[in-house]
Amino acid sequence: MRSSVRSVDGSAVARLGVDEFVVVHVGDHEAALALVERARETIERPIDLGASTVSVGASVGCASAEDGDTPDDVLRRADRFM
Image 1 (cartoon, rainbow, N blue to C red):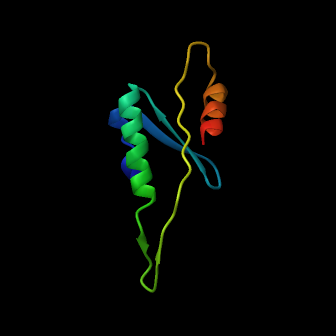
Image 2: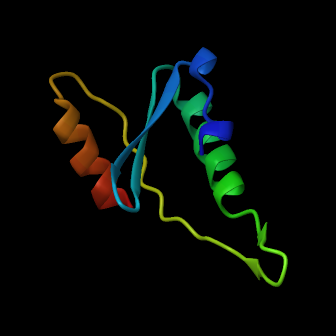
């Protein structure tokens, strides 16, 4: 995930739980959507383990902050969209 999220783009990634991550992006909507697609492509790339190859999937929810939103409001909205 970190390879697809660059701090120079105004983005950061954090782990919220065992299998839950959040990406924060400060910028326009189009750049955020491109970031989501880059992260999804990175996550879903097959991993060669030598004797076998495994694939990982991801569910993604994307939400923008609106006036008066708290961080929890945005996370709840993204979780609903997931």
